[in-house]
Length: 493
Image 1 (tube, helix red, strand yellow):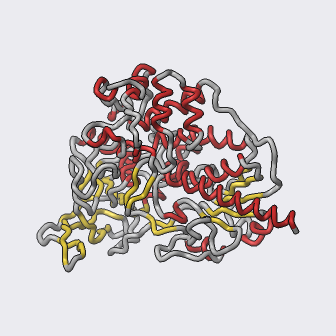
Image 2 (image 1 turned 30 degrees about the vertical axis):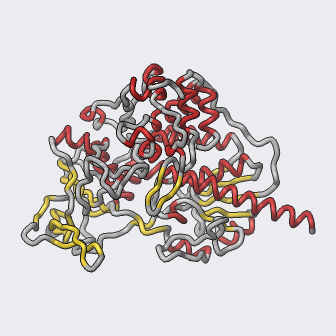
């Protein structure tokens, strides 16, 4: 245990953040790093529980408990308290390929399952994790470690998001030759183009990708399967293929005048904004001087709010169909489940400081868009809704008399994703689940095509970066087993 009664001595202290009003004038990360003194005190709050739920990584019904990749949290907390940062990094590397990503963008299910969270504030696990890896880079402890031998086996990974990168890293460490195919101009997938710079600066991604290249992984960018290289050629050239394309098919909002000029999918907006920043060009979709409405209450919607603020929007509102979350856990959301409680995320704090109002509107349903004569969006119509239990099922009902018109010249649809793109699935003749995801054998991650595996959001559905890393690590293990058994069979024959 780091310090007896440390959790009673030191209060939780989250990472310092840049001023909400000034940080919206640039695209730099909004969080700052703790001092060494603060880190030591925060790690001292760890109780080294007999049963540390923080690293359990279990699923219970539709909820998750603890860290999906089973980070050895009490162990690295103890090492940080002792000032043994290099040893703490070694512990972290055992389970997490990319702590610089999870330490920035993960919602920290580990903290929700921290024993302190039963009746107090949890340990700041996420910020400690991020500080460990950043000190590793600062001090030159993170160096390329190419494998000492090669198996001769070749693996193609389609998609360079967190699942694809984790799988590539693990398989390369095992000695296989790994090539990652990415249709965009930069590697990173969701990390590069789905998460804005103020949460994850792109230099951080490129730093890791360059390291993976130095370790022997090949990246083929601007390369789309079925366009630049055929599926037949891919399966011919490689001993195994892993599909990590993500769940990129956005869920649409099929209402009146959906085709209006000014209505866009959230991911198109975020991607085009990041690409413009990378290239130093104009924003193809800009919120400047516009009334912006984001439809969808999740993290992607919050990132749209923050992006619109940095593009100098006139106003911004975010619609959600669910009621406002409670301040405390409810009976059906007990510890150690992830707490579904109210929080003021970075984007909402920024909007609040600028407009003196939380941008979120709850229990609201968009009915139709209104346009000017030239087809440009000018407003939208909504109605308030409530959920009721009818014949054992929860149904959403509109509340008469709550209709309202909102000015809007830019609407961003952020209501989730339905699964991987259908054209890609058809190319590989991959079997789908009832949810439209890639079907795999539960134990082996293999699809209905021998030697073709799938992992990440394409297999699991829209999820967290940390779950994608877990899927990438697990599919790599199964793919390695397949390749080596294949090798043994060939040798025996």
